Image (cartoon, rainbow, N blue to C red):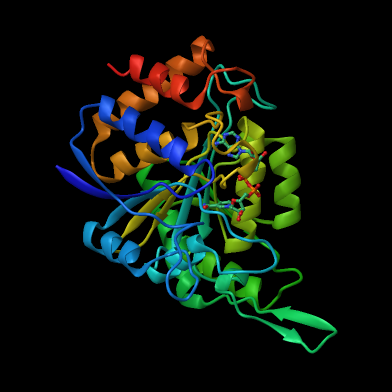
Length: 331
Ligand code: NAI
């Protein structure tokens, strides 16, 4: 039996988390969920919506899965997600982007993976005002963090029999910070038997839209990874389907790419596929390959039939109906 920390989050989080646990249960895998709350409505004494016992339970169980958490824009507390990633040193953000047959989207046969550095860059959160006339955010790129993310990406390419690793950067302008990332990439990648190249981030954005099928595994600093993940989600049907994993040496926290989608929260309309697919990644991480495959096959069947799709994919099924449909095809 596994004990796994479950953080439903806020907005659509509790709805997609309920659907996810139902689908995972249908495989028969023996999981005890240790549910803890973070996000709007749960503040600690410093006004931060990430009580210390949440971190403690993840440290105890080593693995967590979480729904999205709302972060105020331009003011208020620091992102719960960024804090979790830094506190637990979850230095990898792994986001596979794959087309499903049956989902109507801009492109077919996309199968690429974003490996995003998860602890530094502009997300280090070092900002200050410059009197009344401006503000400054500091971009941190270190050799150590760059080495370990490129190392992870190279191993990912090898272990998953992928074809190529591409580094994404803006080293033509940020010659020191992105220049360091690119130098480290070239040095580390040369030690592996993997085909590698690099792209400037703006060209990468255009190439992804023109020819997404030509891309394979892409490794990049934090900010570019955040932006290109959403772009890639848009290529294959939207944020409702793309999963993610935050992985460190000791802990792993699985979560969808999407946010709390306040417009549709509480309406039983959200697509839970992204969190269900995050659970598939979690099961693989646990070595539960058969159970992971059962869910993947069931999702593929539901999309191919196209009878019970959620609103974001052009259907009218509720979150609960979609989850029930997936359970129906778990064999
Ligand atoms: P969002 O991902 O919540 O929503 C963007 C668009 O995608 C909206 O139209 C939304 O309705 C749709 N969408 C997202 N997930 C969906 C799903 N599962 N099913 C159907 N439609 C879905 O991004 P937004 O609006 O920029 O952020 C909302 C809040 O979420 C913000 O406070 C943001 O900081 C937070 N956020 C949290 C994340 C996390 O906890 N990991 C990640 C991204 C954003």
